Length: 55
Image (cartoon, rainbow, N blue to C red):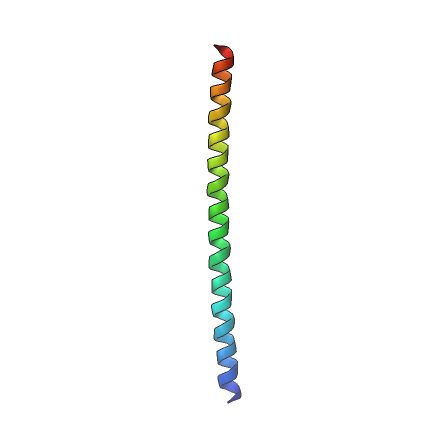
């Protein structure tokens, strides 16, 4: 009985850890994508404003 509880607890810990890992990796990848989009858009705005200023 004690072994069953321990195995269930270990399985639960593994499942929770896996879920946390998946969420963390998704959050990190999403943050990287957002950062790339923001940098790309800001670079485009800077390029447009600089070309307009040159003209």
